[in-house]
Image (cartoon, rainbow, N blue to C red):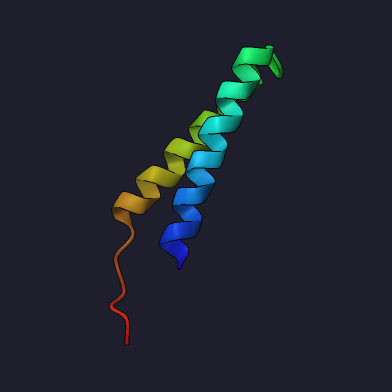
Length: 53
């Protein structure tokens, strides 16, 4: 379940970044949204899968 939540958060953050870029909202600080999405992706790569019991 956590996997789906993280991937949903990544997609939402990337979409928010694109919308902010298109509307010129947030200036340079909006790039932190993309950085957060990238951080979630790196976490997803490094997190160990726990087998379902």
